Length: 76
Image 1 (tube, rainbow, N blue to C red):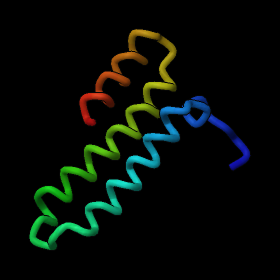
Image 2 (image 1 turned 90 degrees about the vertical axis):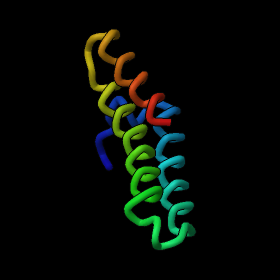
Image 3 (image 1 turned 135 degrees about the horizontal axis):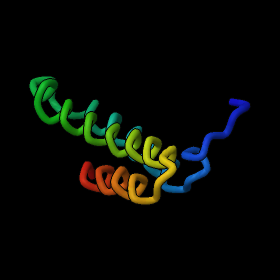
Image 4 (image 1 turned 30 degrees about the horizontal axis):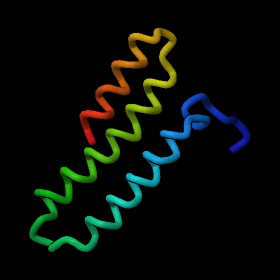
């Protein structure tokens, strides 16, 4: 990608991406009957961490930015 956005410069964003991918790999090993239970919840929470970091980085206000990071931490 030719454009490097603010959130892509953050080290925590790189770790959250790796965490999300690891969660997706982990949930593939879970039993199929958990498809709409644990698998869905783990995947949504991991993706929420990643997306809230990205959205928080785009906020102008430090208070707003911190709030998104807190939401991200809560999803962990």
